[in-house]
Length: 368
Image (cartoon, rainbow, N blue to C red; front, side, top):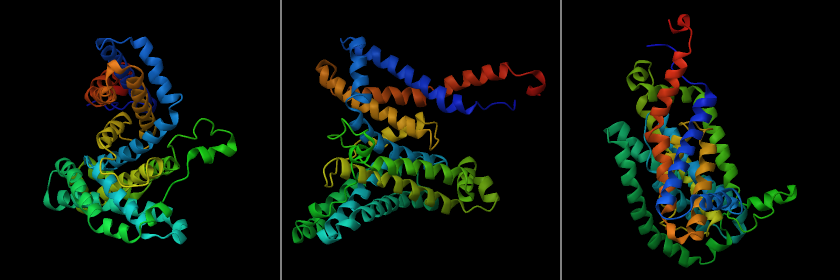
């Protein structure tokens, strides 16, 4: 095999995702045209909804997509497929709800840090269990994480209508008085003169937490010994065992880490939406997180622009469906599906062509 098979970082993490997105937008334009609408009129509405007036909502959705994309990337680097982001986020939301119920108004200042801790711990627990089943019982992780999404709805729904509901009845004002809300980004940006037009948007400081998670995961995976061992496990479990790495422990640990980041999405939902636990939120976001991880090339920092793009597409699609009712409300799913198709299904095709051209341009002595 010729040694030069890798592409430069600006191509692998910049040009290729941009090409995937461009192809997805072209395919979306064809879909809009096939539905009887004018793509030239639809595109400005899509862009305005995503990066114009609806930017605050797009960034709110991008926060969820970023955290769930990081949950996929963390597992992916260890050779695992985490499709349980929804269940982990829902279980994290149950932890946030318990904090809101348990604290009284005098303890409201403790609500936010405890909510972040509870969301991460409950999400980590819901990621650890399928990780243990896979590492110690060889259960297929993709299947168990999907099943755990459904299981989380049943368990949390039963707890909400049972013990948690009784606790709420005994302290009816607790959840409202000590609701752990992140500050709105409009308030944080107002002293800088940048908060205009964001007053009614749900975008909140959870976005900063998500960015910190992306940076922290990058440092952990690429600048720490444990992160290196996790990547070795992802490359070859047999080689990792030969090197003395406890593969089972690393697999469980990385799934707990992935679950913790997915669980933090509950804080964003709680702060940007309504301060209550909803079983249907975040619905369908786990597979969007998978698409974000694919578009971001499985890199913690590459997931950041990918999440922003998907947030803009999501909000822009909502505005487009509202402005052009003939397109239907499912256009958002079509846009996401096309992005997944070109980011995942055709990624190897474009990359293989670029690698082939790069090889063809190498001098003979480099090829040897």
